[in-house]
Length: 88
Image 1 (cartoon, rainbow, N blue to C red):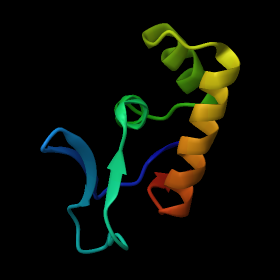
Image 2 (image 1 turned 180 degrees about the vertical axis):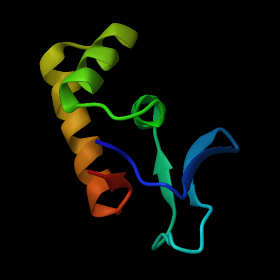
Image 3 (image 1 turned 90 degrees about the vertical axis):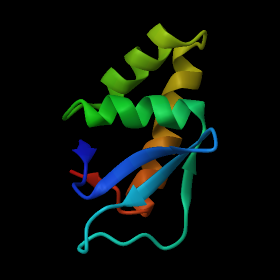
Image 4 (image 1 turned 135 degrees about the vertical axis):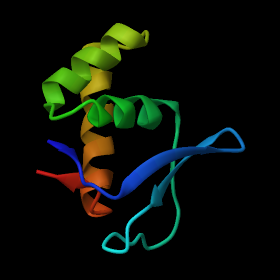
């Protein structure tokens, strides 16, 4: 999976905010990301990846066990899908 074109992550006053940069992409409200969400977004920016690869990257970067990382990745991807941010 990967991110849809037309969305960027911006730092606004220390918060990660997803913004639409294309006429074809519109957000219904503001999407803010915590540190984990920012990390996962940046992983997705690097190209097509899998939930397993995101989980491995998260456990390598943070002191988190695999089960917790897997749950965090699943929650992030679910919310990203709901918001229409993923191209699968």
